[in-house]
Amino acid sequence: MSKSHKPLIDFREYIQKRRITDSRQGDFTASAKVDPNLPDARNWEELEDYLYSHFILRSEAMFSAAKLVWQQYRSQYPAYMYRN
Image (cartoon, rainbow, N blue to C red; front, top):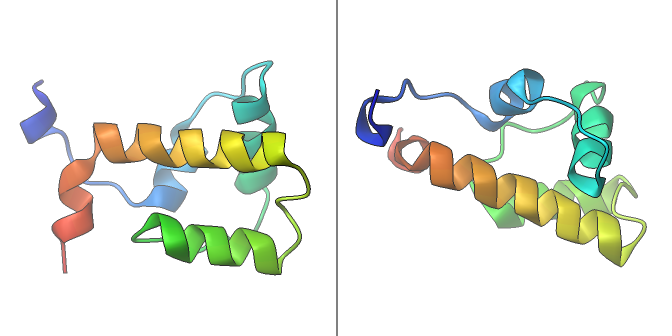
């Protein structure tokens, strides 16, 4: 299936489907999976604001991991960003 034909999924669904790995990205994913208030963010700024307001981004390493996970989501599902 080509990238242009992937089904659209929101960020929360992407997090739920993501494997938890032994890495900073895995740590972020594990935390995000159990966060009942994780927003269905439509852009990085929305997610970043949420993470800072909930003290989830306590370190530069966690910030980098969250941003990398977001970038991976965007690269796999770019069309979602344009859905109304």
